[in-house]
Image (cartoon, rainbow, N blue to C red):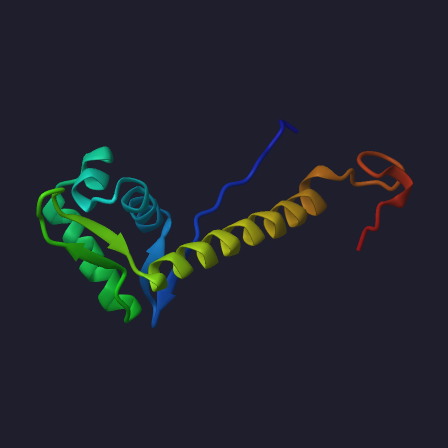
Amino acid sequence: MKQIDYNYKLWLEVKGEKVFGDGPLDILQRVEKTGSLRQAAAEINMSYSQAWRLLRSLEKGLGCTLLIKRAGGEKGGGSLLTEEARELMQRYLSFRHGARAALQAVFEQHFLKSRYPGEGPGSSEDNYS
């Protein structure tokens, strides 16, 4: 058999509706880095208005504020992440890491070990159920 691998996609839902995943995480990380939703959107070729619609949709679905818009001034405006946004990002990253580790373990159990004890990774220590 040829070497196989696996792939997956995770997201968070509220009442069956997708409310957060890798795309929203990416834009929030970019806002955190740049201090600007406009610049974060530009980095991923998204319009500013589309980025605002995405953020408002996320906030509505999650029931919390993720971004604080700062009015322009001498140094210009910008956007700040709320504490809720930072916590959501950290928890999602931890969840994603844990899911990856769990899936990797299950994948290895079912696809990387030999069919027969004494062969493959872990050889005689393999536990086949």
